[in-house]
Image (cartoon, rainbow, N blue to C red; front, side, top):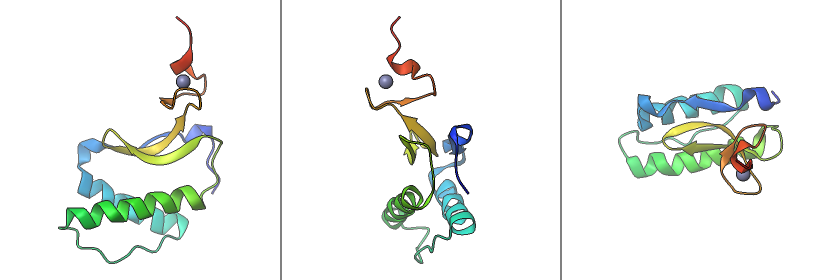
Length: 101
Ligand SMILES: [Zn+2]
């Protein structure tokens, strides 16, 4: 599928916990985008973190998205976010991050 600006936002809320979200993210990438997860020990936090790098990179390489949008973890939440080219912050379609007061 092709993602649009309507698809921006949090996909896996940090409130559910990192390991649970990591498992959901791997499932999401596998089911919807053909990702092949490595066999990992879900009790090994380092292994999970490595896997998250792989799966995040995979999604960013293998999904069609609007410019300046990337899959990533932000503050414990995993989502598809728009990054402002000027300030580097996550922003919205109006780039309110850089609006003058
Ligand atoms: Zn900005």
